[in-house]
Length: 329
Image (tube, rainbow, N blue to C red; front, side, top):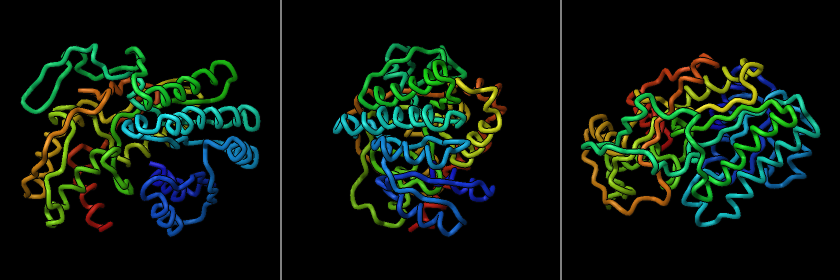
């Protein structure tokens, strides 16, 4: 998401500064790509390093901060919970306190996660042929459902999420929290642990090109559901929120593609098989720890206060994802 938002800032002629440690897969490729689009300032640094964050904020005093830095995989958080905490919780605290001390007029829009709601096992599910459903919440899950930090990733992102809200309440820092469901799109170098739409699109392309010698794996039965949101719609959301900041500071929003753009893994495979004229073979492994059977965001609050709704449907977005994967190869 950082590269897509940075591209939009360059196109709009915004005075852009990127702060990144380039640790994520594909980040160096994305930086090279951005250098080909226009001028901006790049600072190589780590959000876990308070001195580096303070120097950045004190020097730049930015009007607007899109805070996308983070460890984004639940599996990694279980393997290395300290790194997960230091990146997500401590790193966010470093940013917030630097803004409080050195640039109190800066706005921070934070990319949080639906995992702050835990595994959602308290909900009642109905199992259909290719997906789970929650009949009680036909429009999706709203911001009023209870928080439950039930994994290291949920704890670290949830802590950061709550610090964002409290720094607005106590210190008046202008923060906005977006609790995202699944995002995807071009410039996303997905892994088996993070970015499931991109990952499975890439496996399908490999099948078409004869580059996958064995079936890929899926966790669980494939009926788990997320509402998917394309990168172009995320760009529209963040820049629309920047304009509306005085009306939405201190607010939290559940963000996703909504019910109309919800997919299970099995439904994604159906689309990929139809679009690529291929048969996908996979094998099942045990469900992931603390995974949610269903998360579909009720995006009514974002529509009401920001005036935003997704424009790119799931099938259209998946076609665009396949096109980008083919081009990058």
